[in-house]
Length: 416
Image (tube, rainbow, N blue to C red; front, side, top):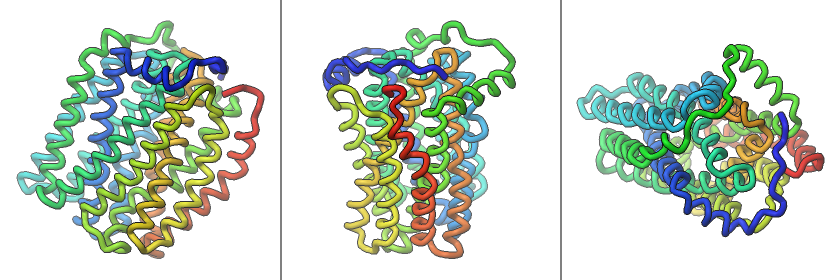
């Protein structure tokens, strides 16, 4: 993959951020992402709590998370090609429309007393398909709107919207589960998708089909995309680390319902606060990156984030005090934000225009490997307990990422 030269002489990022948000097309995209991400985080909390409430099994909690995330792993590369060939604005409209329908279906199922573990898993799989399609279309649309000079700031702002949603969504989900029930939560998720859809109605005229999109056969396009990704050292390192983070580190999030209930003796409202604390830290981290003056050292920041986060997760898993857990998870969230923003930025900068969607699709497939980790941590937690399972995974992630992340941080061949 060829590299796009970064803007070493870019204006202060704080001004760039204001300019980006001042653009109507990007602002619409950002607001729609805010609503979609809020719906997604509400859904993840509701899914984890309901799965454990309905089954009492950490393994089945992991299985439900697997069903929710597996489509991204399976469909990510194809979804990336769709983002390269289709009208991206219409892809986003379609995913939000189907998200609205799926949220309403879940609300009706649980309101009529027909909700159970397997109906929940079946409908949640549809949410996973929609997320697989949304991710590459949304990230490539960001690049189309702002260009390479401002992409790091724009992606960081997208991360800000995700983390604002990660704060508000889980808290709303926790309160809704405790006081109103699952059907009200799914109804709220449907409303959030509807709001995102309304905001997105102005996008099709602004984010059209990519120019010069390839019409080569799908199989050949997939093979060429994987080959190009593997041959670029920075992208290869990002993809390897992304797989390790998503199979060994991030699955801890799906065990938080069990950790909150069994280890910290908390209810759904405390669970919402715990997940929101992660979002608060990530929001602070994203704002720090988005408002950074001048050039951001993308690779060193990425490497530091992925090495420090697992270390702190070991400390989190050993704590039995709710206040300390909240403090630790705020810092972990800030590091997760550095990982997430630099992950997409590095790949977007390295990918040529005609394969940018495909590159993001491969990245989304690597992100989508998280279901394998959720199954593994569910099995491990069933036998060894959630705290030990979290600590074991985090330590293993740290050991395996170290020989990849350190050379990545030291690369000086390109200024990305």
